[in-house]
Length: 150
Image (cartoon, rainbow, N blue to C red; front, side, top):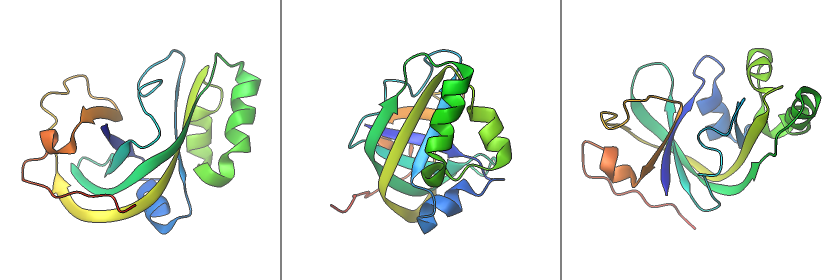
């Protein structure tokens, strides 16, 4: 399964992933919302900045996923703190994610930049920061040859 993942442009998430400084993505909410339970080891993530430019600039393969049970505020904060070395969250991002009842931690490997290409989000009216697209070619406006190196 391919996913389009929006990254925090102001925090430099894309740059941190591509440089290897960051190896984990976090999502969290009060309930079990996307991508909770929908992302799995081996899935491919395509990275796009949340700055309205609308182009994929990187990709990586999911090496592990942790979907938390319902957490207390303190347990949620502790979980985020424990993984901060991989997450590399700014203070603003930490405040956004720490304390959420449900946390999803996604470790990513084989991270690389790709020739930038736009995506078509028309079928995703309920815009979120995580789009499970199935096959990246289904949202690409041009033919792609995307292969993850083993």
